Picture 1: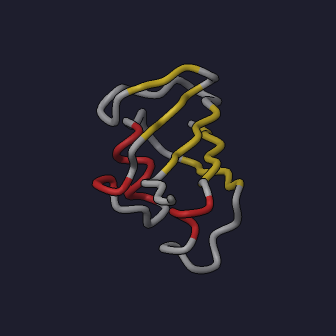
Picture 2: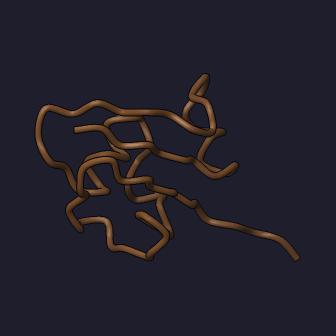
Picture 3: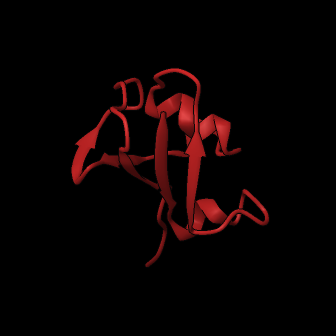
Length: 77
């Protein structure tokens, strides 16, 4: 299975060297939580996850060729 994962700026600071967009190959289906962990993003830091343009929970399964966006916490003021 192939997944394309987009990692938002705050999370990219955690995963040194990982580009904003990465293609991940997996031997079996995975959840968003498993995909995040596979690329080195601690799932506890994922605040929002989208797959194919729709918001999903971290334990939702992904379908083949899913395009996944991971967003971390945002602060400002």
